[in-house]
View 1 (cartoon, one colour):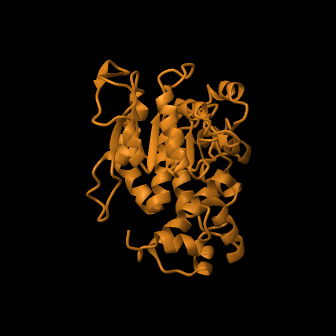
View 2 (view 1 turned 120 degrees about the vertical axis):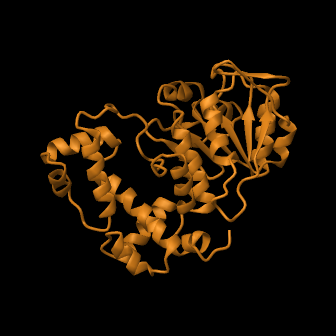
View 3 (view 1 turned 60 degrees about the horizontal axis):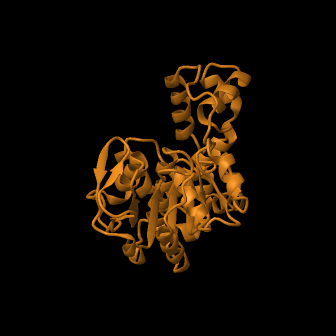
Length: 315
């Protein structure tokens, strides 16, 4: 796992990558990521906030990286160094994974690694990204986009979700949620969640809505209705719908499906329940509808997910 450092470094985005991939994880009994900082520029580099940073390795180290993180970029209007673009193209050609956080997408775009692909960045920059790189399918309404080998994320905090998503791909949802708890944050959000919520400070008290969301999460296997949720929140259905979307950026139906998929992942990883039992516990009317929904959400059928991330697997 190689995290790029450069003159003018975006410290928050850089910190996200180091925190998630570079910290020791004594809570796990399996090897964590092997981590290194790779310098884009020679000599001491400045970071935002007045700090200076140095790294032990230069771009040549990228030949050994299986995953590369581009934590923002110092100036989206500045052409990245040709040596960096060449190194990223070579890494991509040999199969390395590359993840960008926020404005780091402009580096991947300049390298031509996003042509013909869907990608995202901070909502303030999506129009500019589309105008400058018309071969990219820019999605302004998501937290991150996973193209398999290349992952792009929206604004800074969405980089946490994208990095946790990568942890989930490598180690499973349970491990990703354990990392999230150590970060003292909610479990990783799905990439399809809206990145820009018009009213992030909800007019209804946060604690009241949080209690309803927690109750719904605990009852994700029940066929909950908006009417039930609104009654629990002591609101009319119309008011509840509006305030729910304002607070979460999702409709109740989409949020409940995400909660059910999270429950399903946890059951597949930690229990030996069969598909029909998990389907019922997650509120699906049939095991077939569950399999279809799970495959769409996780990219794998339930049986394959269990084989990869189940508790019996030796990581």
